[in-house]
Amino acid sequence: MQPLSGITVLELGMVMQVPLAGQMLGDYGADVIKIERPPRGDIMRDLDEVGTAREDMSCYYAAVGCNKRTLCLDLKQAEGREVLGKLIDKADVLIHNFRPGAMERLGFGYEEVSKRNPRLVYAVGYAFGARGPLSGMPGQDMLAQSLSGFAMNGVESGDRPRLTATPTVDYATAASLSQGILAALMGRERTGKGDLVTTSLFDVAIAMQLLEASSRSMYSYRTDWVQYAMIFKTLDGWVTVLTLFRDNPLQLMCTAFDEDDMSTDPLLATASLQRKHAHIVQEKFGPVMERYTTAECVERLSKTDILCAPVLDLDETLKHPQTLQNDILREVDIPGHGPVQLVGNPVKLASQVKQKPRPPAALGEFSREILSDFDYTENEIRGFLERGVIN
Image (cartoon, rainbow, N blue to C red):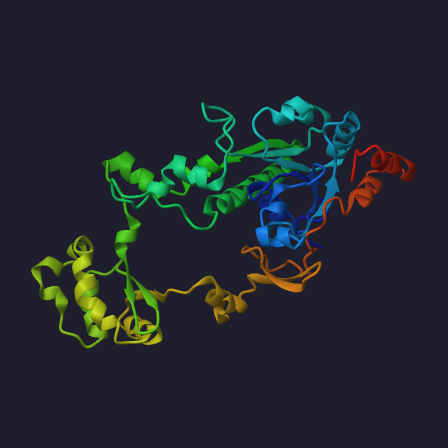
């Protein structure tokens, strides 16, 4: 028995935010039905240029498409909307990331849906929220970073903004949305009623800067956490050295490498001055680190209680013993590829039975099976196929 066994989730999601939230729920045993529009389905299926050129599965779709069944349903047709309505009547959760008003125009806004299924948890992942001047604007992770201040976090005035190279906000929003859904399901156990769960890329991007926001609100002070870290080149790589929580980190660093105490320099006498004049620390201490391998640097610094870590690229990380021994990777049988290592759910339950993930499904792969589960006859299903209601 999985934690969410018996919970049916209808996922009308595109790209990453909602599809990842759906996958997270599927990881815990929910029956996630991904509803896609014909003829191409979720645009995430086409974003991988290599996969598209090979007429193969998108690696991006594979990353967020596990533990789901797929139904290709044409919601432009009245019959398609009737089918969705029937699914909604029996579902526990509906999750989507359409723009504000889109589901209402189809007749499936929260007010309409909650009347036909009062126990339904209705969850929406917006780009910029349901209200406000930007609510109707199309959104994406990097746009949310740009508008939320995220891209300017740690950037000096006048310098070029920085976007993260991975969709950090998408991931955090998916996790937040799934958290809200789980809370609403718990609430339903007490009240017997569903709820409306909403979040947005914009809100989550702001929430991820809660420490910086509090410093501005309370002291009009611009926090920069990166100032507490320095990255040094080594003989064979790089090491990040963290100067937090230490009264005189430079002195400890010098001790680690049997060097004279550089903190006797008045400009570097305290931790605060060392952060202020980090470029001087880099100039003086950098050549020391370059004489040693990364492993030697980490070993020496750790012995003097300096927080540090080697800088790895993703290929190195995925092969690291720490990664392999903590079950963050899972083997998934991808059609045409065989067993592939994909990133799994980082939150694990001790009581959960470990199961092989359901591979990401082809467009409409489970259409017949799903409609049969919802009491449609074979003749009705055949008619839907002939009329293009399902694929």
